[in-house]
Image (cartoon, rainbow, N blue to C red; front, side, top):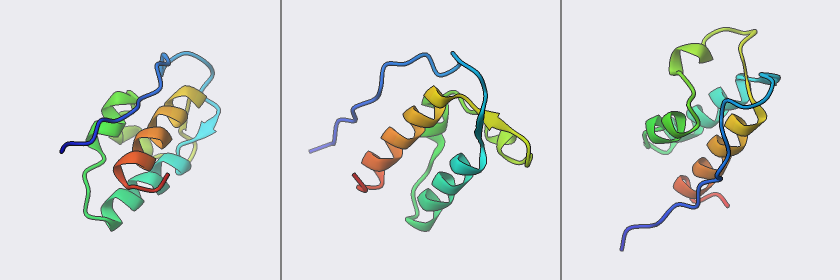
Length: 78
């Protein structure tokens, strides 16, 4: 039976971009370690994968929360 994800209902782009994108990069690395694709989580959090390359890039708290919530469920790491 397919698993239903519980996704926070937040506006991912609302708020200040103050959370370092290095946290998102670490989550993406975990996806790759488990052989899974992070594209759904990134798209849902409205994170452009290209923005993850800059050392000074940041995301909103909502983007981080959405990405984390989806990753915990998809990686079975709740």
